[in-house]
Image 1 (cartoon, rainbow, N blue to C red):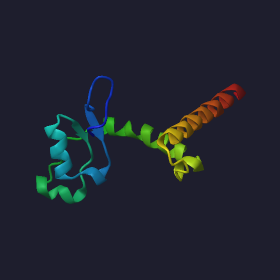
Image 2 (cartoon, rainbow, N blue to C red; image 1 turned 90 degrees about the vertical axis):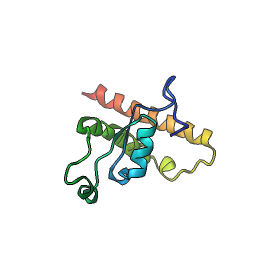
Image 3 (cartoon, rainbow, N blue to C red; image 1 turned 60 degrees about the vertical axis):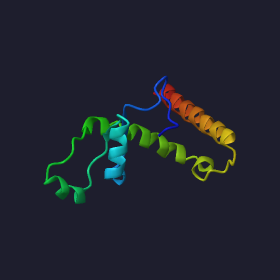
Length: 113
């Protein structure tokens, strides 16, 4: 998280994660660094809070699916999913080519309608 930079901000305002990231240590770290946690609570943690779940923004969590879908179609490109490229620079070039390819495919579909 220390390496993330969004514009001038050094850290994001909120972080979204699935239930696998619902650990007290992670939530404490996020609180200490003034980062909001958009992480659903695991069912085995409800007893610790006496059945009262932690605050959770469902609307913000749903927006996470945009990123998940993007990663999903990027992994459809075999070269990216298996990480053929050893150098980060070459890998980034392949990601850009995959995005261009996707964009051109979407443009072609919109021309047909």
